[in-house]
Length: 206
Image (cartoon, rainbow, N blue to C red; front, top):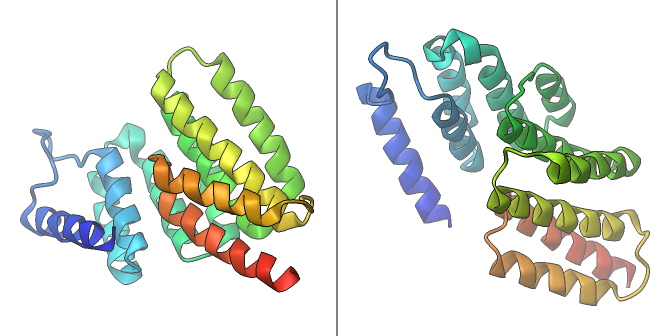
């Protein structure tokens, strides 16, 4: 909810201002926290603050993770700013063997392809993502379940958005809305926003 997001953002700001961002004796910032701070600021459209933070704290990232998380955080911000092609450029610089990071990168790419209406690319990315999940031995079952639900959700949304799904459009849309509200879906804010857009699109076509 917005109030939770605002509360979280004010906690992050206080931590950053007072130097409480590091539990590391060398003063490094935790890399996922770095990305989360940018994401939270982006959700609240605090773009100027997020950009300053991104640049100022990139040197507080551990050298081994600096390029990856700087690029990931930039991708997050560019997605929120709807600079989708720039975000794809950021993601192309993200190299990692960590399966959790790979899932994050795929999730961002899925969002971008959907937004840009690149439905063929989206189909093949969803396909490789499904193979990735079924073959990976490290990612936990619950993380796999959350990612698969997200993939399936976007796949059905893309069929509605592209016009490939001609029948039962209102019914499918309603079941997607119910599912999103019920589940602890990843990218929930974004999905609800896209479902509201689809509702307008379907009403217009009907």
